[in-house]
Image (cartoon, rainbow, N blue to C red):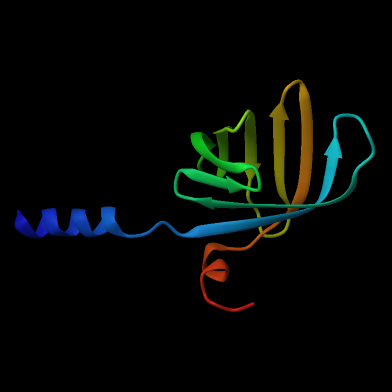
Length: 113
């Protein structure tokens, strides 16, 4: 029993692996897409953005890693993918869509540039 508790505590104390996504393309509402530069980092139940940290409030599909996060006056739906990541930001009646890529968690934490 003591070993099970120790193992459980070790798992809980393990840091979450961060995944960083870069979005060089952004599309405002119905306007043409333009060059962007937005970056987000997903770590555990927090999505860190240039505008602040958002709490992950849902994971609608575990299979593709999609998360919905909320905070700082916006709701973000992020589908991380190494080849075709997508994010949709909704705020004050405006929607911004982003296209980009995400580094695999191992790539983001291996210390290489």
